[in-house]
Image (cartoon, rainbow, N blue to C red; front, side):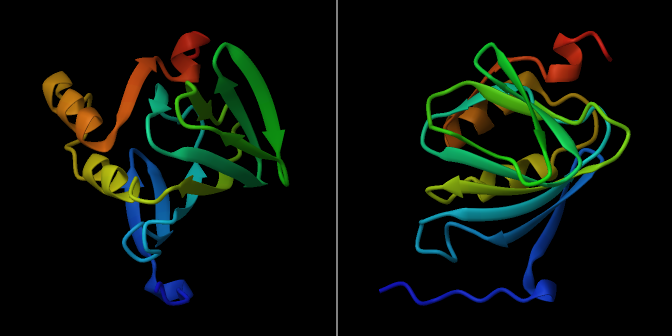
Length: 156
Protein backbone atom coordinates (compact mmCIF):
# COMPACT_ATOMS: atom_id res chain seq x y z
CA UNK A 1 0.00 0.00 0.00
CA UNK A 2 1.26 3.45 -0.90
CA UNK A 3 1.37 5.84 2.03
CA UNK A 4 0.10 9.43 1.83
CA UNK A 5 2.81 11.85 0.74
CA UNK A 6 3.54 15.22 2.31
CA UNK A 7 6.30 17.36 0.79
CA UNK A 8 7.27 20.49 2.67
CA UNK A 9 8.44 23.58 0.83
CA UNK A 10 12.07 22.89 1.77
CA UNK A 11 11.78 19.15 1.06
CA UNK A 12 11.62 19.36 -2.73
CA UNK A 13 14.53 18.99 -5.14
CA UNK A 14 15.46 21.85 -7.45
CA UNK A 15 17.12 21.36 -10.85
CA UNK A 16 18.06 23.66 -13.73
CA UNK A 17 17.04 22.95 -17.28
CA UNK A 18 18.93 25.55 -19.29
CA UNK A 19 18.36 28.88 -17.55
CA UNK A 20 15.17 27.74 -15.83
CA UNK A 21 14.55 26.34 -12.37
CA UNK A 22 12.26 23.32 -11.96
CA UNK A 23 11.24 22.03 -8.55
CA UNK A 24 10.50 18.33 -8.34
CA UNK A 25 7.92 18.11 -5.56
CA UNK A 26 6.94 14.44 -6.06
CA UNK A 27 8.40 11.64 -8.15
CA UNK A 28 7.30 8.29 -9.44
CA UNK A 29 9.44 6.75 -6.69
CA UNK A 30 7.74 8.78 -3.95
CA UNK A 31 4.18 8.23 -5.27
CA UNK A 32 4.28 4.51 -5.95
CA UNK A 33 4.64 5.25 -9.67
CA UNK A 34 1.42 7.24 -9.90
CA UNK A 35 2.79 10.63 -10.92
CA UNK A 36 5.51 13.26 -10.99
CA UNK A 37 4.57 16.72 -9.67
CA UNK A 38 6.79 19.51 -10.97
CA UNK A 39 6.80 23.27 -10.64
CA UNK A 40 8.72 25.33 -13.17
CA UNK A 41 9.63 28.80 -14.28
CA UNK A 42 10.03 29.24 -18.02
CA UNK A 43 11.98 32.28 -19.15
CA UNK A 44 11.73 34.18 -22.45
CA UNK A 45 12.11 31.98 -25.56
CA UNK A 46 12.62 28.83 -23.51
CA UNK A 47 10.87 25.50 -23.91
CA UNK A 48 11.64 21.97 -25.10
CA UNK A 49 11.71 20.66 -28.67
CA UNK A 50 8.52 19.14 -30.07
CA UNK A 51 8.33 15.71 -28.45
CA UNK A 52 6.20 12.65 -27.77
CA UNK A 53 5.98 10.86 -24.43
CA UNK A 54 5.44 7.18 -25.17
CA UNK A 55 4.35 6.29 -21.63
CA UNK A 56 3.18 9.46 -19.86
CA UNK A 57 0.33 11.92 -20.12
CA UNK A 58 1.65 15.47 -19.73
CA UNK A 59 -0.57 18.00 -17.89
CA UNK A 60 0.44 21.64 -17.50
CA UNK A 61 -1.35 24.41 -15.64
CA UNK A 62 -0.22 28.02 -16.00
CA UNK A 63 0.00 29.72 -12.62
CA UNK A 64 1.40 33.04 -13.85
CA UNK A 65 2.19 34.49 -17.28
CA UNK A 66 1.35 33.32 -20.80
CA UNK A 67 2.47 30.07 -22.39
CA UNK A 68 2.34 29.09 -26.07
CA UNK A 69 1.59 25.38 -26.46
CA UNK A 70 1.88 23.34 -29.63
CA UNK A 71 -0.13 20.11 -29.92
CA UNK A 72 0.51 18.45 -33.26
CA UNK A 73 0.35 21.38 -35.69
CA UNK A 74 -2.05 23.47 -33.56
CA UNK A 75 -0.92 26.38 -31.39
CA UNK A 76 -2.81 27.37 -28.24
CA UNK A 77 -2.08 30.31 -25.93
CA UNK A 78 -2.62 29.65 -22.22
CA UNK A 79 -2.91 32.26 -19.45
CA UNK A 80 -2.92 31.99 -15.67
CA UNK A 81 -5.49 29.40 -14.58
CA UNK A 82 -5.55 27.58 -17.95
CA UNK A 83 -4.66 23.90 -18.16
CA UNK A 84 -3.75 21.54 -20.98
CA UNK A 85 -3.47 17.76 -20.74
CA UNK A 86 -1.72 15.94 -23.58
CA UNK A 87 -2.16 12.16 -23.75
CA UNK A 88 0.81 9.89 -24.33
CA UNK A 89 1.67 9.43 -27.98
CA UNK A 90 0.74 13.00 -29.02
CA UNK A 91 3.44 15.42 -30.23
CA UNK A 92 3.58 18.59 -28.13
CA UNK A 93 5.77 21.34 -26.77
CA UNK A 94 5.52 24.72 -25.06
CA UNK A 95 7.43 28.00 -24.91
CA UNK A 96 7.39 31.40 -23.30
CA UNK A 97 7.16 34.06 -26.02
CA UNK A 98 6.70 36.96 -23.57
CA UNK A 99 9.29 38.90 -21.56
CA UNK A 100 7.63 37.97 -18.24
CA UNK A 101 8.60 34.53 -16.88
CA UNK A 102 5.88 31.87 -16.90
CA UNK A 103 5.23 29.85 -13.75
CA UNK A 104 3.67 26.41 -14.34
CA UNK A 105 2.66 23.25 -12.53
CA UNK A 106 3.42 20.09 -14.53
CA UNK A 107 2.00 16.66 -13.65
CA UNK A 108 3.27 13.60 -15.50
CA UNK A 109 1.25 10.39 -15.21
CA UNK A 110 2.38 7.77 -14.55
CA UNK A 111 5.47 8.96 -12.70
CA UNK A 112 9.09 8.35 -13.54
CA UNK A 113 9.83 11.12 -16.03
CA UNK A 114 11.58 13.03 -13.24
CA UNK A 115 14.55 10.72 -13.89
CA UNK A 116 14.79 12.00 -17.47
CA UNK A 117 14.68 15.61 -16.28
CA UNK A 118 17.42 15.00 -13.73
CA UNK A 119 19.56 13.37 -16.42
CA UNK A 120 18.97 16.33 -18.78
CA UNK A 121 19.84 18.79 -16.01
CA UNK A 122 23.19 17.00 -15.53
CA UNK A 123 24.23 17.48 -19.18
CA UNK A 124 26.99 20.01 -19.85
CA UNK A 125 25.90 23.41 -21.24
CA UNK A 126 25.41 23.72 -24.98
CA UNK A 127 23.84 21.48 -27.58
CA UNK A 128 23.74 17.87 -26.36
CA UNK A 129 25.66 15.10 -28.10
CA UNK A 130 23.09 13.58 -30.53
CA UNK A 131 24.14 10.01 -29.68
CA UNK A 132 23.75 10.67 -25.95
CA UNK A 133 20.39 12.35 -26.55
CA UNK A 134 19.19 9.33 -28.55
CA UNK A 135 20.24 6.97 -25.73
CA UNK A 136 18.46 9.13 -23.13
CA UNK A 137 15.35 9.34 -25.29
CA UNK A 138 15.15 5.57 -25.70
CA UNK A 139 15.77 4.97 -21.98
CA UNK A 140 13.06 7.43 -20.90
CA UNK A 141 10.57 6.63 -23.68
CA UNK A 142 10.41 10.09 -25.27
CA UNK A 143 10.89 10.95 -28.93
CA UNK A 144 12.01 14.36 -30.17
CA UNK A 145 10.16 15.06 -33.42
CA UNK A 146 10.66 18.77 -34.14
CA UNK A 147 12.21 22.04 -33.05
CA UNK A 148 11.26 24.24 -30.10
CA UNK A 149 8.53 26.80 -30.86
CA UNK A 150 10.87 29.85 -30.96
CA UNK A 151 13.03 28.08 -33.57
CA UNK A 152 9.98 27.08 -35.62
CA UNK A 153 8.73 30.69 -35.55
CA UNK A 154 12.16 32.10 -36.50
CA UNK A 155 12.58 33.97 -33.21
CA UNK A 156 16.05 32.54 -32.45
